[in-house]
Length: 421
Image (cartoon, rainbow, N blue to C red; front, side, top):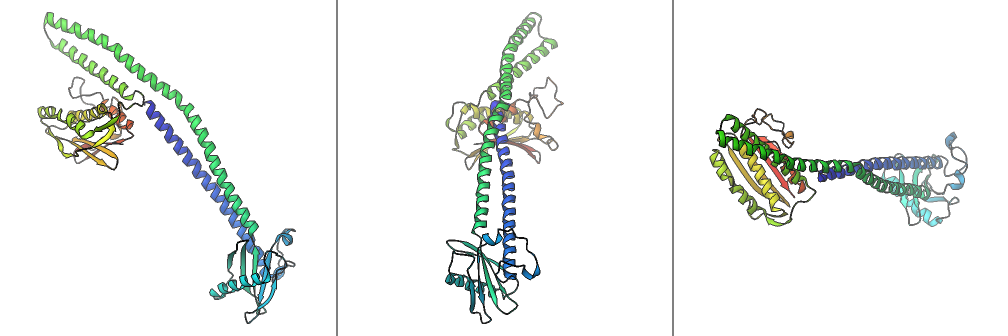
């Protein structure tokens, strides 16, 4: 894992942490506000019930029932009552406990309440809200036993103001908490990943240094074996030694390639290039390999011309070469290798497929692990045996372009799909 991968994991951790915290805060704030609104409305219902049952009076117990109101209830409650006689005419108006409106306005509000009440056929108890530029009223219209009707309006501006204040305060707490958590998570996660970044740098340096150190003894073994062959002629032992020397040399070169692929976040010399021409030139170079291996090679049927993107040409060449090399190496005998290039929105999609009849039950999640091979039965001397490094390099290259790579198998064909952004 290189520094880019570690930083991407850190970013994902920060995003997931913030999303989790935000979700928790929203749920808690929502619960508090909903509970507060329900509690406030319940209190309003109780007051209106009391006033209706007590026929608009603050004193006494309605219907012989005691209402548990605080001593300040009679001083803090602001309301007015309008009575209607049996003919629907205004019989009395009581604005003793409110100074925000006059009798004319009180009658106007009550007439509106009467219309709405009888719009429901006068059945049950209905609670309405009446808003003016100065106040918000909850009111209830009801019929009395003596044949009269009354409309009770309760001034609820204080309760509504408190609810609004709780709502805005909860928003401030949520956003403030998110900001504080973001700062803490960002700072602490940076400290947490620093040791991992240093370890990744040490690993890359070790691979590079070890690879260079191993080249000298490999060169000496090769030279000694060649001298021995010149003096005594070739035999099975010297040939086996030379094969192992070649194998070790290839392994060292692969390790160096991995280290170079992971060096910093640099994607090379970036410029706007013709991806179609770059991939086409690379693909043509594999025609001879396909021909000598008896493989049907199609790199033109599904190829989009004129595809451009900002990229390093060497990266694109290496990506295409590694995928085609892997496809040629593990393609079934007399099979087919197909290369396709297309665009989707702002992404460039490169897909390389090859025949692979034994791929139905393979664990494709391991294909990009280093030093892993799907066919473990290959011997050390097999020419087709790789080191399980090529696809790992491909994954690093794709990740450096903020892309994705997927491997799938369907009806005897395995496909590697690279999406570059």
